[in-house]
Image (tube, rainbow, N blue to C red):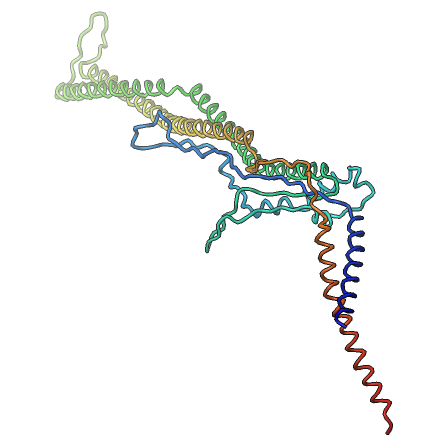
Length: 398
């Protein structure tokens, strides 16, 4: 019995092994190409310093800072895997494959294509709250053609690097667009403020206005001195009139005139003349005071406007210069902007096939057959024994 089981098992195993070997020999060989990527961030740093012209000052009115590529953080390692495995990237690889001779007429889907694509990254260190990945990323593509596998793998790597580079450049481009807009607005404000300042300087010469005010004040001072002198003279004339008015005023004889004025009348006439002069001076003083008030009001307003515009021009000039520096450095950063990923090793056409593992398939099938055949055979014997026994029991007479 045992020899029979062994013989059947060996025969079945050999038979199945031969069939399996024949089937595996009909299977196409496939080749896996590998591209290695390494993450090496661009070595640029943010600069923030005090210009040398301001060095040594206790107060720092401003600092100069530059926008650099490092303002945009690098992607975590799992993000790279998701980008490379995204539908957009896989779809482009699928379209690239559809143009190849081997895949013409073959219907491919992104799900099926992903089975031929592999991206791997290894954990370098894993702590309680931190995971560090190795900087090497491994891309693999498998197909029946070794040259095609290498070509597609390199194409896939370039696609992902281009996508990552665009993802990094888009924020920089948005920032540059904002800088261009802000810089244009500040330049326009600077031009408007400078034009307003030029209009004030052309229409109102503040030093001349100040000299005019000083001249008017000097004139008023001179007129007031004259008024004081006239007041003394008027008072003196009033006393003389009072003294001469004690008796009848005698007329001063004037040759050739019979009706000459008296001394009192002459004094009164002179007094009225002095009073009129004083009133004229007072009116002139009032006019000068009004002109001074107007000039001072205009002078103060225009001086304040000029000072405000000059302060705005200083601030706007500094803002424009800083924005211009930042804008130029942002453009330089955009030109230097690159993906942190670099190709450490391009995929080459593999010389050895990656599969199928024919020997493993044959040995696995033979091993399973060697277990299954005796198990099934013994099971059949046991089942046959109990079936015969059951039939004999049914056949006994009652």
